[in-house]
Length: 525
Image (tube, rainbow, N blue to C red; front, side, top):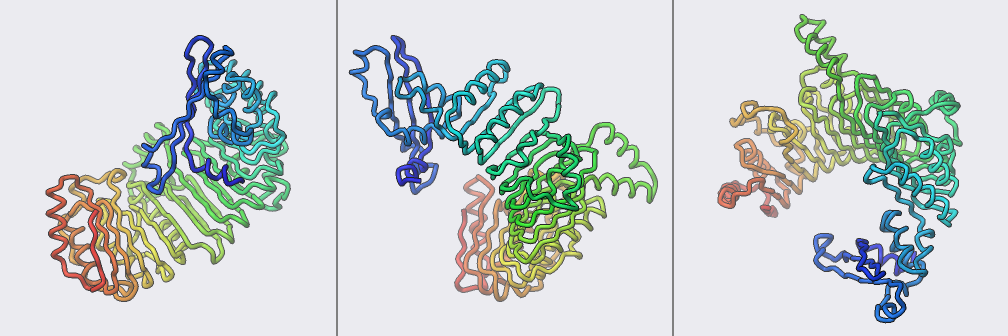
């Protein structure tokens, strides 16, 4: 990439067309320059105005500095726009007629979804006239009931050595899209995004069924990034797809599951980052049945509850895994097998009702045990058994996201005692997802903040408290951390309240607390 291209990449581009009458067609290119202040400094805007006209006299009057740029730069500029906008530049003048056809990015979006035939004809024309044999990225977003043309477009992109494919294909009849077989064997494909419910049929389904026992090397031979988003997916197709990738490094599974059990065996030898984000949506009939089951007696009721929370199972074998992001409402049975490289874990078990099911709490303890050797942990959960927390001997940084229903001082003290080498602590509040009432949160601290864990005496250097509102328990925690942290260098308190007078009063009260470290400074935000 040339230095000029790198400079242009630091800009944000906006393309606006207009017609001024008398045969004048205009293109305005708005360039937002990134500054040292970041993207917030968008007031520094450079606007280039170009008018291409058919009248020769008017052509002499207008100054067309943009068209004087080399083809390489014009192609690079158009790569920031969608394909529809890029194609429209062909009407500006002869100079622009074929520029769009050399843009290595195809971004096709059936944005308005009111002219299916027109959009299909447009895509066919674009793929016919596009001149490049190599495409960097092919992006397609559409809503059709007939997928035959869609499969043909994808196959065309794959034949042109595409590197990245982004598909968002939905049907008004909730039909699942069948992935073309060539997508599995494309040697140039490195990044694949599927924002669609899909199915795998034919010979590929037969091959995938054996991949757990005998991996097939020629499937996804170059794929390094995979993002899958779904809504009530076909369980067999998901299990078949998410099974084996020889060189995959980044995998994201994001979606909504229903009553069907979803079992995923993820065997990815080179995987570095795994993100799983799932929520459960139970059908109305199932909910009614569950409601009836609640009136059952004793063990039968408990068995039904446990069964309702066993709709998903994960088996992950990733010896090179470095980062795990796990966000689910109902925790599944999860078995993790990884090497010694896992350093970062983000665990979010956000469903409040899950805390009512003992089996889920047991799974949560098992999951935390499997990530107990990480150096960075972000944790948010309603269903923890505090007495079953593992030791985090290698933990350096902890972010604890607590709910209003948590006994925060008890949970915090237990984790600190199990994290002897902790150096950085972040406490954050999550209010919106909590279903507790105000009565569920006690304003009277239980007085458990008496012991002083080893990390407070020798290692903890920074503390950040986010969305602080000044409840009594929060005040006691701040007081405890300031007093007992012997090597603390900085505490940052971010106020949630917007009332200036309340914020000043809180700051005044906090400044009265004794500080155990002479090097500590307290900052309010």
